[in-house]
View 1 (cartoon, helix red, strand yellow):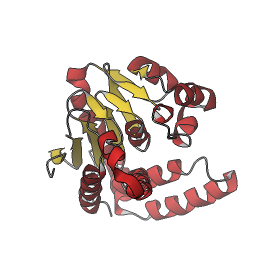
View 2 (cartoon, rainbow, N blue to C red):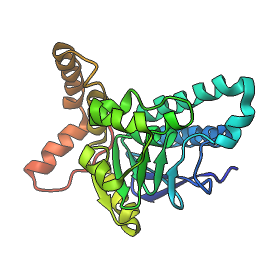
View 3 (cartoon, rainbow, N blue to C red):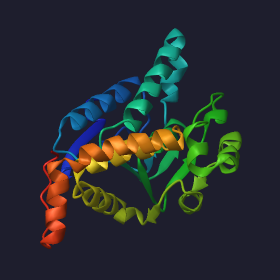
Length: 254
């Protein structure tokens, strides 16, 4: 079970987290706990500036493990609460997380992808808001905010999957790649983010994540506070110096 979540560091300042729980990469209680531990370890490593989250095989993530669901009994509510904590933890992660959706993202797997900052997909990927298929409800908050209420209802009320190209047209993913090129594309994107000023990236993630929750006045005040801190940073000075002297700045997250 300890190998169901694999963490590696394939590029400077970039972490790769893989869900490896065949056949469908379901997130039962133990696998979920392992993912939480992996996220904690990566977030505490201040050298990491971007993360790629993906699955192995033909699935990104199938959500909860239905075989476990059938045996949980009175522990079901606690298990669902743990799932919610995982989603909130991922959404609030210190650095940007890119979901490289390599295959099926169903139910809780779709929600996992929604909690990431960016999503790109394999041409073979499929996405389904499958709550109604198993007598539950999921993605009713994050999915409408991302793709609009009408499209979200079409997915969530029917439980029918959409393909990768439809997901791109909906704005659920920003790019679709051949399966053989997905990981490299995700790592290229993560590396681009990791070469930007890290304090600026983290602040930008925080503020854009609150875009729908603040009034214009609140947003302006919050952004102003962040910018004041960034303006005094060594990374800002390095970026300006790099621009003026036509050289690549070296960022230190300070």
